[in-house]
Image (cartoon, rainbow, N blue to C red):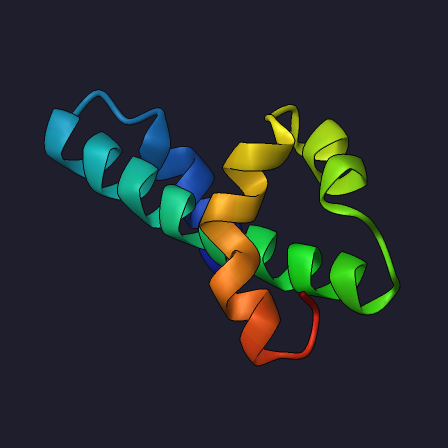
Length: 76
């Protein structure tokens, strides 16, 4: 069973401790994936607005969350 499959199963566990730990781990994974894909989009010339639309947030929110990292990678 892959780690992602196990986390998905654990997230629906009847044991709150198991379920909540899985939710936290999935949230951490989603954050890392978001960082990766925002960086990818910025390197390909995407605007903060285009990224925000895909993420379903405001341009200001995505810029505030990711601008420092993007600037360090030459993406701002």
